[in-house]
Image 1 (cartoon, rainbow, N blue to C red):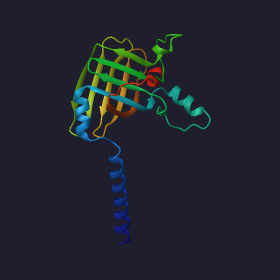
Image 2: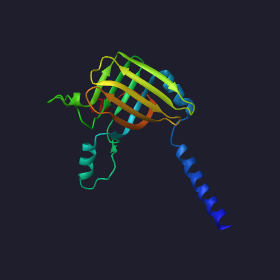
Image 3: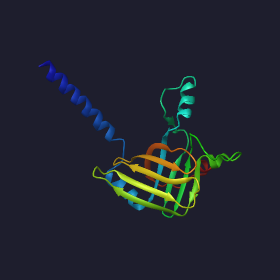
Image 4: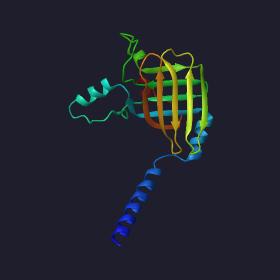
Length: 184
């Protein structure tokens, strides 16, 4: 009898946390409408570098956690898709094979593209896979976004001259940028 009570209490505990976590996102119809409109923003909350040199340096810092995830919530890092315009403001942590000395703008993923292709598909679970190929940006080969039904998103960028990096975040409707955000 005690086994059944403990199993039921564990299942109830899991059910409560599952229902709480599903309330933090958006409606799946809103996510589908945003993806189909091609007028949305991906907001990065965390960066996941793949270079172990960067991870080892982060782990050697005092008071650091032993994770390979960098918190980006303090800044305004995003990819904005506005019809025929793609704007990216994302930091890069990793090995750049052809760095541009003296110009830190080119060492991050900070660019505007007006010539790009977007391919979208949706799997059986409702997750959108969006593949973006900018043709007028030299250091970016492909951007792949996985947008989940609740609005959370996982974005990975494959560059021509650097190691890949991924970002965790969420999508939202495009907003008019204020002057504060443009200064960043």
